[in-house]
Length: 270
Image 1 (cartoon, rainbow, N blue to C red):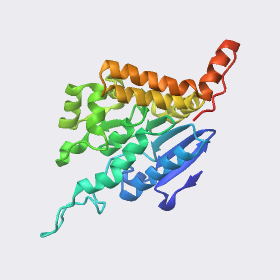
Image 2 (tube, one colour):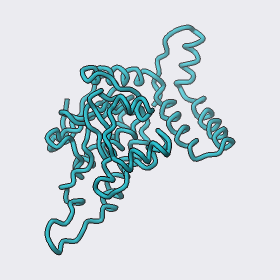
Image 3 (tube, rainbow, N blue to C red):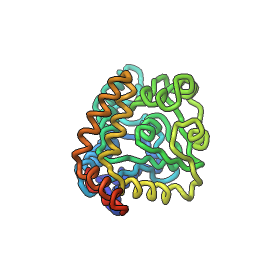
């Protein structure tokens, strides 16, 4: 196990699964600009490492992430007369947008293992992952309206697509705490499970995905995201384009041969 500078992010690996642990437990893993940079760089490193076939993101301590640390220099509001307010758009443009885009374009599947509260940008980050597992004691809070902001880090795009416009508006406008079990029931996340089982279940799921054709998994994510913006005919053509590319990949050849030979496939593409 290794830790990045200042131990804001802990990186560990088991087989082909790399786990990134947000490590500001005393602050419920709230994001500082330094943590955002380290997380983005860690995702980039995982994307470039052929030995990584799945990534898990989780939090240290009792929280996943409380969202943006409001005491961080780039967002801290004026505390004295005459102080000029910060341009929050600068924080988003230079830190959150690059992180969200890197997460959404990973060449391998990404799992969020939500071990505690996921609020604000912390919730958006979790929901931007491919599959979200949460401990039953965890919760999701769209906290933005409480401080006069809108959901960010992809929140406005993700919420209505996951639960529909009406439920998205309820979550975003009221900002109430949503327990993990209810989040699973409404389709916001993949699954809620007992707190003590989260880490093991996340690792088991990650190992399962790592053994699958991850190139096809990444392409499936791309196809589903693309289809949300396409008409039916365009989606059909996009499927054909992706199938054409995947049909020349090693994993397709291996998967079909293994099926015909009635054996377990050994996928290696990335």
